[in-house]
Length: 117
Image (cartoon, rainbow, N blue to C red; front, side, top):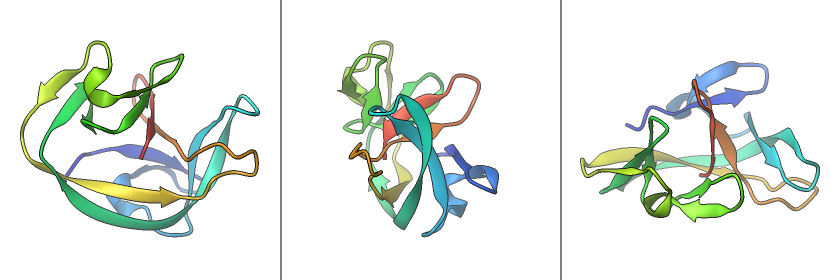
């Protein structure tokens, strides 16, 4: 299982497979240029045939990753390396915020990474 850690309001750093509907996960609001917490609506798991390692995080090939200027598919992210080992990923369905930003989350670690789950 992809070992992502997310910042959950009132729980702190939490493994993604321990996050439940109703939890508030930290992401970024581009309209307000600040971090925000958004509600998780539901969670599911699915297989992942190929992923790329970006900043030490294993990210599914087609998942959006913030490059600092724009959203880029993980497989197109500069510096990404292919990890072809099959895995299971946790999918979080997250509510949009009032500003209309699409859902995204920060992966917590030494070098945080903003993704679209």
